[in-house]
Structures are given as structure tokens and as C-alpha cells.
Figure 1 (tube, rainbow, N blue to C red):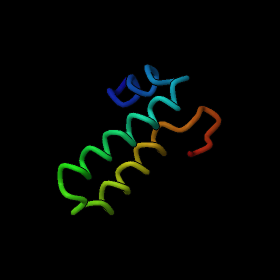
Figure 2: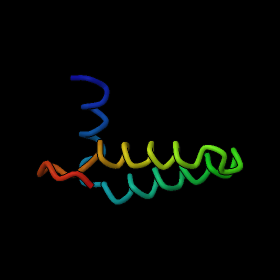
Figure 3: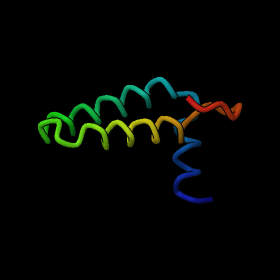
Amino acid sequence: MSVLDKLKNMLKGHESQVDKGVDKGGDLVDDKTGRKYGDQVDTAQDRLKNEFGDDNGNQR
């Protein structure tokens, strides 16, 4: 089992908290960089949210 699989299992059932954490982390990076990399941060946030979608195969 890979580290990513273990992380997904740990976060299962807590998707809303993961979304909040991803948003908060992205906002922090945006603030620290003066929003210079806003597009890249948004892309990373979207990819993280999609990676930790629900079990039904639906991506968020």
C-alpha cells in the first residue's frame, strides 16, 4: 500500500475538512507570495480536492 493510499484511507469520511484545509493552505501561500502565483495555487488546490474525492468515483 502506497503512502497516498494510506493517506486516502485516513481521510475517508472527512472530505469537507480536507477541502477546508486545502483552501486555508492555498490562501496562506497566496498571502505569503503576494498572490504572485495565484493561478498555480488554484490549480494545486483543485488537484488536491479531486484526488481526495468521494468513494463513488465522483470527483469534487
